[in-house]
Image (cartoon, rainbow, N blue to C red; front, side, top):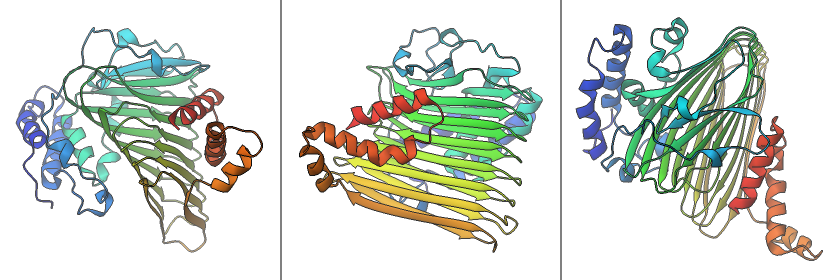
Length: 433
């Protein structure tokens, strides 16, 4: 148990909880889940630097502030066009401060795909089966807080055999001049043999106030489902993010996660947990992090092999500029029943600037004896000899640096299955240098 410091945000949440947890407004089972989660949050409290998983993050500056707890700006025009990706055929689903805005969003025309706000999904059987069944088994206090007090989010479901003809692009916009603490909850259920590209982009409206955003997403892939999941963090410096994505995979399913963070948001903590829950499952995690100024980006991943004949591949690359900090903490678990596992993990880091910092901790925990697993980490500075080589051949210094960074990131970007997203990410890398 953590001793809870008195904070403005904590006191606000405790005062707001009775209104959110009143019986009768929602199904009883749902209210019970909320109440249990809030008790768990109060027991855990906000994490401190004394905890191993949070040792590089001092959250007190964020949670010692007072925030508005809800501001969905219904009906207000919000500029979201700059999040659109050139050349990407997609349906746009716009979330403003965590609330789904149908008036700003496209209708999905493909049969078998359902999109609705979380508040309207409470009576859906599929929702009741999967909600809080995965992420809430972790000890992340922000997941417990989200489950207890979230008000907004999306429920997306795919029927058996459904295929999204275009990518589904979820645009998360922070808007409004007030300081805001938002909590968004998403649940995506991929039915058997369904397939989709899901792209999530985070942006900040010009003139928006400071914000702390707590986002929890649960992704369920049933038998033979396939999902390409792109997460593109392009918000501005007044925005901070705590995100937790929990993925549960059934047999023969494929999940690819492409997690990209660029200069902007002052603080980003991503938790991405993939549970390979049945045999013959494949999961891949790819990451590009480009930081600048005094930005802090912390990526924590878990790949949990629970059954035999599964494969995972994880490769994260960090490019750290100025006085910014990047953290990579990746864990691969191979459980006793997970024989014939093939697991790979790699983290490469490039430091650009005398004050840039990287913390890297790749980890393997293997309890089976018939497996093929490897992990590694490299940290180095910008290669001045390579820079000189390019400049000696008539390439300007700025273009030479861009070429070298592109070459460093190529191992990851070349694995993007969507060409439009790949080109967009490469352009953001160039702009961020």
